[in-house]
Image (cartoon, rainbow, N blue to C red; front, top):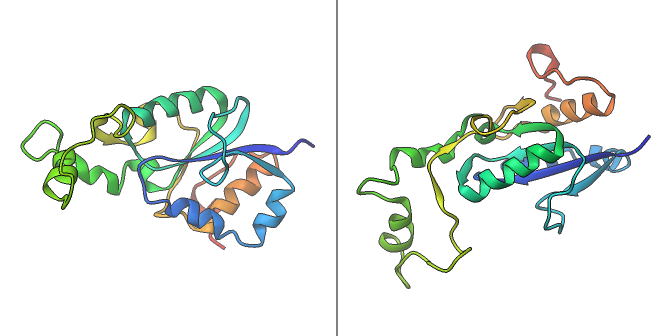
Length: 182
């Protein structure tokens, strides 16, 4: 059997979901024989590959770059998983939405001017600060999401349950008693 091609990506979030993935501990050793991590913050790959079997996406969509990446990922991935509450609902990153981008309290002004001790000003070189979306949004508002893996972060047992079901060729069920925590 060919190894499952797996990717993970981190948009607007805290990386807690990736930390929870690492909490799979010794199961990671078993997993290494069955999957190939083809794209991830922990892998030095710059371009998202084609023919990815499963992608776990952590974080909400906060800027135009996130949206561009998400569309590429959806196009090249068989099963896209909203990985954690930020990807599922927007969660904590959506707190920015209350500030808005078109009112007196602009988040970039707040971060780069009001709160800066030195070099006050928004960096204006291309590629330094991605263009923010008017509001932070969850993944499903832009593309079709196949599976929603809730939690802040999802417990390692829930991540393991998803991966085991996929590895066994099942269509994962992530509801009720089928969400296993241990």
